[in-house]
Length: 276
Image 1 (cartoon, rainbow, N blue to C red):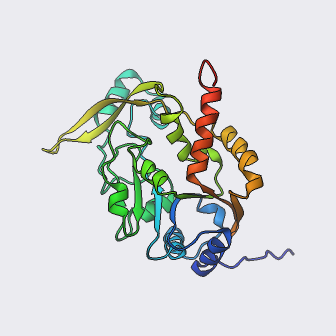
Image 2: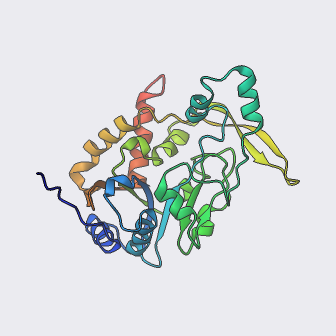
Image 3: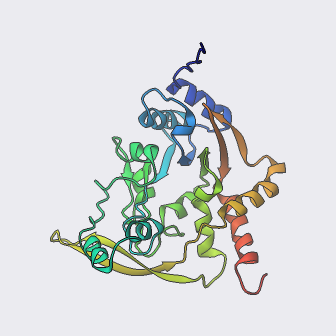
C-alpha cells in the first residue's frame, strides 16, 4: 500500500510572505501575468491570490492584469481556430451572432486570476474591446482611462502609463511569450512600424451591435521567448530581474522600462530590413 503525501493548502499569508521575499514592495505598481494552477492548491482559489497581491503592494500600490478578449475579432488566432472547420455560410452566421464587448460584463480571456481581479469591488477596466486591462488601487481609474481603439498595447494604452510609472511585471510560472510589455516595443522600435487591419464587435448607443474596422500596429509575439532569453542574459548580472518561488510556482519580477528598452533595440536589430 502506498501513502500519498497530502500537501497543505496554500494560504493568503504564505502568498504575501513569498511575494515580499521575491521583491514585491508596498506602493509598487505591479502588472501581473499568472498561472493559478502553478501555485498549487490555493485555499479560496483566484480571489485569494488577488487579495494577497493587494496586500503585498499595500493600500498605496496597484495591481494590474490584462483582461483581453482575443475572441472578439475576425483575425485573431482564437477566432481563426473557432471557424477553421466551418463552411463560409456557417462563418457568416457565427460572426453575425458574436456578442459585442461590454467592459462591465464581458469575461476576461486571460485566466482565473485576471477574472477574479476584474470582478472584485473597486476594480476598473479599460474599454478596449480586444486588449483591455483591469486595475485596483488609488489611481486605477486614471490608469484605465482613455484606451484608444487604435492602440491595443501601445504608448497611449494603459500599458504606456505603466511604463511611464516604472511598473514591475510579476510573472507567475509563465514564459516571456506572455510578457505584454514587449508589445510596447513593437510600436516604438521604428518610426514607421508595420500596420494591419483589425475588427471587433461593439455596441451602438441604441443597443445594436456592429462591426468596427480600424488599423493598428502589427502585434507578433512569436519571438518574445527569444527576446526574453536575451534580456535575461543582458540584465541577469545586474540582478535587475528577481527570481524565486511564490508557493509552488517559479516566478520572475521584471522591471518594465529596461525590458521594453531592450526589446526596442532587439526588434530594431532583427526586424528592420537594414539593421541599425
